[in-house]
Amino acid sequence: MSVSKCKDAVDSLVAAIRSGAFAKENRLPGEYALAARLGVARETVRKAVAELISRGLVERKRGVGTFL
Image (cartoon, rainbow, N blue to C red; front, side, top):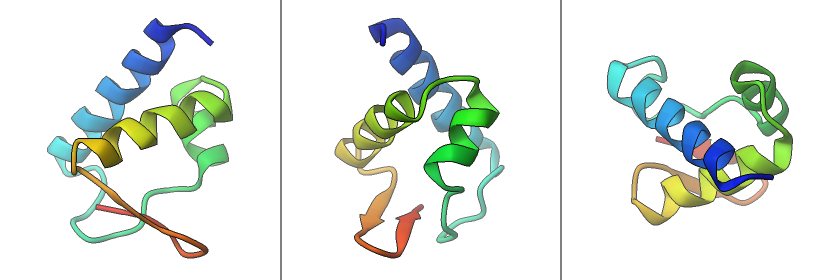
């Protein structure tokens, strides 16, 4: 995986969050769905979501999902 693909995935997810594509306090789609939507591998989505967590934009609840 290239850093560029991960950065592009992060940028796409941040834009979607800011545009309201994901309703506040709702769960994000699963990794496979996000990977298909972004056209990247699931591992790229995992790393992108980890970056969003580190930025405080989303929160992962183990066994439940990732939420805004």
